[in-house]
Image (cartoon, rainbow, N blue to C red; front, side, top):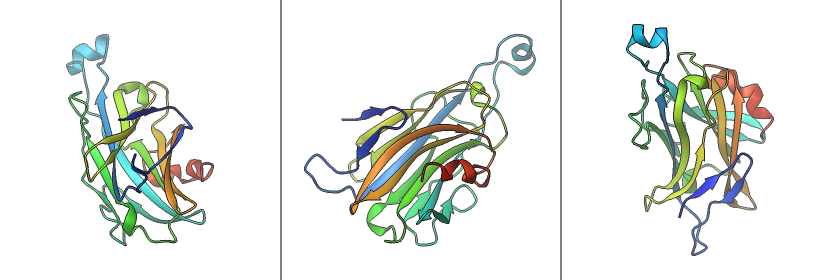
Length: 195
């Protein structure tokens, strides 16, 4: 059963039977919002929007590694990006980009993994609709949590969520913080407030 998360909500990443999850997928999906008015007539009503999912791995508050479209696998191999989607989806609700995390293989010094999304081409979130991130148990395919990315606004990025260790177990927290930037590097100052 999936939990619809709200900003700031935190959930435990353990299964109903009390065992820990071993592998999760953070999926990102979106569509370009239909354009209205004169511009829509000139362009055919829509435009491709290139959102990018990234995962920044932290140890004691310091960024250690990042997984994104130009670095698809973390140096230790525990986090893997499935590839870049330049246009978004057709609204079917599937993942347009995904990042797989093998929690059992994440090195012990990594205590937080922060997931971000940014508009590489610079469009604002007012030009995006049906955007979401979701956490899936990669072993069973069951959706554990879904966070709807708030639409609208002049921001070009969002700090989506993080997974972090608490007492040896992994937790997920929905952050949902609007930010400005076209790459994960631009977001590092905003991310630091959530560590």
